[in-house]
Image 1 (cartoon, rainbow, N blue to C red):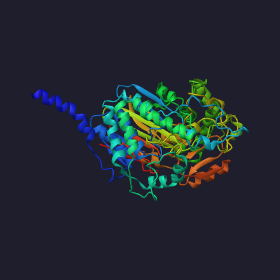
Image 2: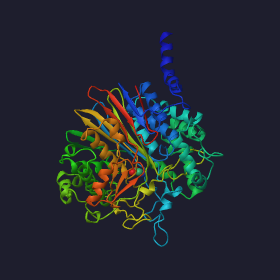
Image 3: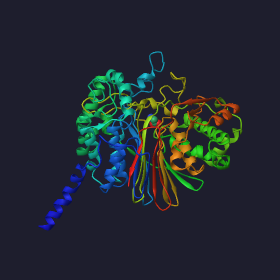
Image 4: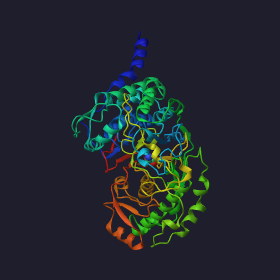
Length: 565
Ligand code: GLY
């Protein structure tokens, strides 16, 4: 009898725990800087970080928490969190294994190289940005299930916080209210069915956003696994939405979508091992190149944000982005000379043309150009008490992606097709040209800049980081790593100190508004065009100190928030 009771409790426990609500979705605060002894999650939204910690408390590991946090972000951060987009996960497990999971969207089977050109061959980039035709085949749900192999808890338990948040609603932040109000006209114009994101009147801080249709889709996924999204009712709804809105994603595209386990990029930088994402992200190659180009220079002597340090970093950024534009694309479709362009000899040669105190000219560096990217993506970091470390960046591409919500299913579709070179070799509407390696082909993954990264020292993870920010992602992660590992900044300043960005073309240095004036002046005297711009990225960071103490920092630039214990 006692044994029977014990078995019943064991069987019922996950369901009881799943129903447990460990945080109040109508009353929560943001924690920008957290110290913890055992585990931590940091993400773009306080409720998503709390969802991650909820499953850690239930016995989940860092991968469980990363899955629960991503699902919650799909509800509470519709601007970039998603079911209808894609992403990358890198992890370093406590037994030393390293992982890179690619769940980037792919071009639909009916995609064509010139699908965004008009009859005169002119690129119509609004078509790759807004509406049904802008969407690539979503990868996120496949990525969650590919990651789940390394998790401990049943998937349904990981989805429970997200389902609750969608079904019962949560109080939106000021930034979310502003974002939804800004997109109102686009939601009305681009959707074929009513969506939860449009209400009578305007959204205000603290309003409750309920997403009943999204809750239903999440339940289907929790119950049926991959088939709950890529087949059956949800797939039918996606395809019906495509038919209503002139999109091309088919049932075959959905059913055949697979996440890919890639060999992660691992390289040494001044005694640290950097673990990061390979192609189809350009991010890992980019930071390997930039760090390789600056490694032998005495940056710590020159100092943080000194004109000398910043100039060297700008020139490394310029050269890495020139290579990105020319060489990089989905390696399953094009040949990319990765070994060569990340080799020490090559990187030293690239810096032969660097002249201290004088700006290089992009026109003299190389030919080609990186595709234009917009900035709405999202990052999360997790560490658990066993030392499993996970770094995930996911995206819809632009804010709210294509702005198309799948009718009856309640989730937004990406506009990731714009990350392809819409017309290789020819300037697009912004005067940029793209490269052949990243041209559209059916089934190909568009080049990304997402750079989820983990730093390892003495066989332990010491830093977990990443950020949104489109083409600025790679330079932000580059600067975050140098801030922490070379300039010796503390965790908060590593994240919040003003950032700068150079991406080869246009040949300008973009700086945040609080970037030091004196350095800007010195750069101008060296011949750089310096322009101030809106905030760069929203970096998340977890630092694990010797002895195991954890410090988690959410970027000051958004609603980003840490949770843990
Ligand atoms: N859509 C942004 C990126 O993948 O880089």
